[in-house]
Image (tube, rainbow, N blue to C red; front, side):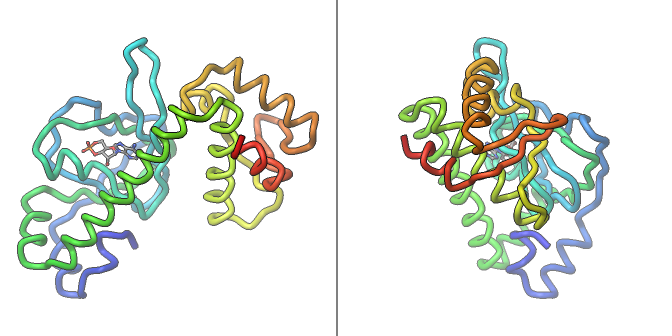
Length: 218
Ligand code: CMP
């Protein structure tokens, strides 16, 4: 059940699903590199896919962790240029691969499907815009607070266990907000002292989302 399929009528859905094929990736396995050619897009049937981009300084920035139901690889598939970021399986993943020719055929005879794909691109654009503005205008604590609030909200959608437990290492958080592990650690330690979060057995527990919210707007 993913965005691109949801809008389709049964016939179109069958048609596209009939042409798509599954591909499995093991945890940590690369799916594609940034800059490689790409003629297909992928819908995530199960697992989590991490989208990253290397930076000039040889580090990488984590652009998104996409859960099941999300689609990626649509940019190169549509514009015929190289992949704009790298994709890696963060867990074992099952991907439904859609080839350009099949998606183009679908777009040609189903304007609703084309609209759905545009909505997907717009959602991505909005998110990138938001992230870029955050990195440009907010200090590290506010960026970190927003990232934790977002991750906690996504985790809460998947499981109702309270408090929300995140399996994000401090280095990962740093790569999500474009900062250093040291800065992230300093911030988390302070929030731990104030009871907003807890760090236990490699987990990050979000104890007080409202308290974090106050830091998100500083
Ligand atoms: P594509 O350029 O084909 O390959 C990399 C994919 O990563 C890209 O398509 C998008 O699907 C996805 N992607 C690129 N940038 C972002 C971002 N900022 N947030 C989420 N996904 C992205």
